[in-house]
Image (tube, rainbow, N blue to C red; front, side, top):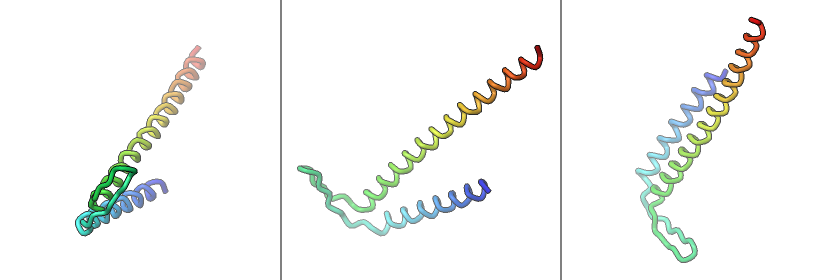
Amino acid sequence: MKKILDIIARIVAVVIVVLVIVVICLNLRPIELSFFVWHADIPLAVLIAVLFLIGAILGLILKKGNISKRAQRVESDINSTIADIKELTK
């Protein structure tokens, strides 16, 4: 079941990436951003690309955190197994 969910998630990710690339290629009109004193005319495609990049980086950070937590659990399981083996061999 997990493999099916992974495949579906990868397909959805590829579709989203393709859609973002299409939007970047087709949508080049500028959008005006204003933050207090700062004003800029930024192409909407660039804004979408930056937001997508930030999302991808945050996703990698979160995934890396989950992997490190999983590694810590595996390490503690290995340590407890070694302790059990030492008790049995006494």
